[in-house]
Each structure stands twice: as C-alpha cells, then as structure tokens.
Length: 614
Image (cartoon, rainbow, N blue to C red):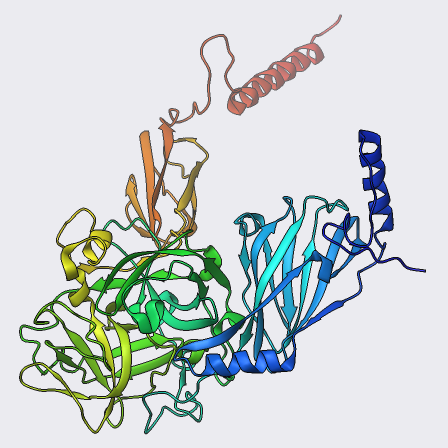
C-alpha cells in the first residue's frame, strides 16, 4: 500500500497534526518524513480547460509580435505530488495546455532551500534552474515544445517545511507568425524555407559570425501575453563588458508608446539556432544554450531602446559584444545610396524562431521625417536629425526577409559593426530628395540609424552616448569585443644542461598555451613555433641568456633561461686536479717502467749464467 502526502510543504493539507512543544514539533517532522513515499512521486495533473486556453490563444494571436498567451491559474505545492528519491524530497506536476505550441511556467513567489533544483521538461527538451536562479523570489522558465510539460522541484533533503511555490500563470505558445510585412522573390538554394526565411546556420561564415553571436532573442512578459523581438549585445567605449542590449522601443511599450510598463519582465535567449535544413517554426528559447533574466531600461529615443542586463552575460551564451557605428552614414543623407557596393546584413529572431538572416547590397538612407504607421518615432521637432537605413527586399535584396519578431534586430556592415535597429517593414522602398521615406512598389525593412539615438534628446534617459561613451571621448565608432575574455597565454622554457664546457652544446626546450605566436630574443632570435626544441650549437666560454615571448588574444607571456659555459681544460690535462698526484695516470709512463724492469731482469739473468765457478 502506498501513501501520497499532499499539501503546502506536506505539513498542511491531507496531513493535519497539532503539536505545541519542541518534542511534538520534532515528532511531527519525523512523521511527515515517514509518510513521504520512498519512490518517485506520481504525476498529479494540472489541465486547463480547452475553452480557456483557446480564448487566450485567440486574443494573443490578434496582437502584433505576440508569441504566447499568459493564462492565470494559481498553483501551489498542494496541486502536485511529493515523493522521495535518493534521500531527497521530489515534487512533480503534469501541465496540459491544449492547443499550445509550447509551455512555460511563471512563479510569482518562490522560496526554496539552498541546493534545490527546478526542472521543466517536455517535447524532448529540458530547462533546469538552481543556485542564484532560485534566489530571486520568482521564476519564469523558458518554454518546452508541445502542449504538455512536467514541472519538477527537487529539495536537498526530505524536509519540505521551508519550501514555498506559488505559480500565478502559465505561458501557452501560439502558432508562429509565418506571414510578415515583407516577402522574398528569390533565395539562396537550400538556405530558406517555403516562406523565404533564411536559416542563419545555412549562411554562417567568418564574415557574419560576430554579428550572429551578438544577436539575442528577447521575450517581454506582460500581464496577458508575451511579446517577442530581437536585440543586439553591444560594446561600449570603456570596453568593460557591461551587458548592454539594444532593441526596439515599440516592442517594450506596445500600442501606448510613451511609458515603460513597470510590470514587464524581460528574458533574453542566447545562441538559439537550429542546423541548416531544420524547421524554423519552433520557439527560439527551445534551442537556446543560455538565458539571462531581467534588465533595466537605460535609454529610449525614436524606436531604439537600450537595456542593461541584471547579470553578466553567461559564458554558455558564446556571445560577442558587437561593435558600434553611430557616425553620420554619408555627407548627405537625403536619398543617397549608403557606401555603394558594400554588403549590409541583419540577423534576427523573426517569428520568435531560431536565428535568421537577411542581406542587401544597395541600401538607401533617408534623413528627415521618419514615420512608421501612425507614429512619428523620432519626435524631435522638425526631425532633421532622424536618419534611417532602408533595405529594399524584392527584387534587389540578395536574400532573406524580416517578419514580426525581427523588430529591434541589428543592421551590420562588413566589419560586423551595428549601424541601426529594425523598426519595421512594409511599403516604402525609396527616399525622395528631401529625405522622406516614400511609399513604393517594393517592400522594405527600415532600420533607425544609431546616429539618430546617439545624442537623441540630450539626456541619460534618451541618448545612447551617456551609456556607451560615459567618459565622453566623442568616439562614435567602437570596435567589438568577445563576451568572455580570452585566456592569458602561458609559456615554459628550459636549457639543459645548465652548465657545459666550451665547445659543447645544450638543448633548448619550450612550450606555450593559448598563444598564437612566439618570438626569441637574447642569445637566440627570430620567430619560433608554439612548442619545440633546438640545439644551442657549440658555444665558447661565457654566460648565455635565452628569452621567449609568446603572444595571444589574452595577452603575452615571457620566459628566460640562463646557460653557463666554462673554459675547456688544457690539452692532455682534461679534468686534471691540483698538486698531490691526484691527476689521471699516464699509460705511457707505465709502459716505460715495464720496459726498464724487463731490461734489468734480463741483464741480471745473463750475469748469473756467465759466472765461472772453479
């Protein structure tokens, strides 16, 4: 017979006891632990009514850039099942959101003891949270595909009295918005799906990789829905790796367009890609390698918004701080081609999908009244300072397109520097002589130039420069930077033996790590391999110093070794010592002594034989 204990921290709900003294409290805890089943818990189910889910999905589908409906449904530990696995209390809940394309969980209140872990699994994917992620007092999980999921909470021991979980709502993913404001007339073979979306992994190359690594999927959670946009991690003049992400203001503010909703929660999904040929119709968060929770709005101007993440970019993101080019695009921005012949490209998470790509070679720039839909996003008087890049799609675009969810993504040049952020798409593929964006036969994507927002508004709440050039260096062009500092090189160098006699040789041996080049100096010179050995050659008396310097992306390392060469002994006296006959014996003297002895012996014998005895 099995016993399932239910309730908030087990101690409530089905198991009710009244203990007032210390002994009673101890007994209560012991009985609670004893009542926990010593096997994996069963799966209690939390299934939301089909009508409730469908109504929420329909409402979210009517909102631009929405990717999920937020369905309020308070849930606590009382709704799941507890058990014990390997001496740890484990709670599980099966979640069903009929018709959803993905499931995520939002806990407005969370208090778990150190060493706990929360896992959401489903559709062959799993997201786990532990450590600092569980110490924020709340939790918004990344989604798993499908309309069902398993939520698991594992505690470090069988004690559950200090654990608290209050789930306020669930995210139900809606069908990816495949139709966008732009279209595609021709594509690179095998790189695009039937809608004309180009999978970034199909065209990933050295020339666009830094921009790709800087691009991040942005989810903004509001009271009744989750919206999606794209953003770019960017460097600042100090090069201090502050995690600034630039994106689309309209994605943050929505239809109100005036103030930031303080209840909005922000989540950033890193490195969300799928192999070339795989479907793009799956939420980017499903494929991420890392995520960042929380960000603060630093500046907004026009349709640009600058966030600073609450935490450093995780190493698993494999991210890159993109370079910034906020200079005036040309000497005249009124309807002129920008850098004729250059390639401009964008990386984005259109439709909340994995990374996608768009490219154009004949961008235009407009320099005046920039209006998109009913809003005038620049709003700086006569708009003379507003500059936008226009990427025309068919027939002049090389390949790719932008769709809802691409908003806020970067437009990059051949240096992988970001030039502007995507505002939107639609009719308007040209500029007139006054610099106005014109309605035209071609569809186009419009990017607000960083030039516009760099000084826009002139205050820290509006202008990018207060954050990206805090020291006021005046530099509008800032190079990119790796998110994780490269490791510092190391080097070793030995000379053996350390002392030799003149006319002899020694062996130099060296090795380096995390270096790209090594150079010798001192008693040797020239470029050297990253690891190796070589002879000193025969040397004369003296002291020799061999130095090696190895350089890499993370700095340099130097090592030196000293060799002492002593004088050779005089010929015929190698190794002889001082007086006292302590030197080596000369063999020639031995032969001489033997010869003298033999001669004397012979003489003695001859004399004896010739004596005449009478």
